[in-house]
Image (cartoon, rainbow, N blue to C red):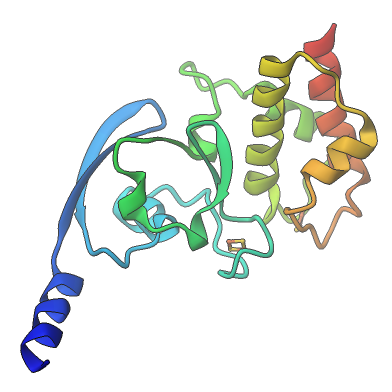
Length: 174
Ligand code: FES
Ligand code: FES
């Protein structure tokens, strides 16, 4: 019994090598199996745009795209990122540094106040846009609200954020 426990402890403390694509670049690192993706992104790769909010999957501030799907990185074990494509807020801007359509829409609609929720909101809107591109079905305002349910904002009252999301979908629809 004791032997088995010891073996488990060694495993927990072991480092595992993972390789994945981060904002379009192939990267690899050694991590503990308990490392969270949020911590890996912020601490190992110094990408601080992904925010730690509630740390329990409630606020969406830590959202990133994993293979184009929005995921709360505070609940995601980094070891599961092996072989996947991760996009953070820093990966949305184009190579020349200009803003992505989603980021532009948030700025133009005055949807940013303290900014704490903004990267998570942008990631969720981007996921919506990606999904829209695949399905080619325009989302109603109510559907957009539903899609953004997992992202909390304490400042804006949401109207301008939903306006921004709607403008992204509208521009893609034209
Ligand atoms: Fe991850 Fe709030 S910090 S959902
Ligand atoms: Fe402050 Fe959303 S802009 S939390």
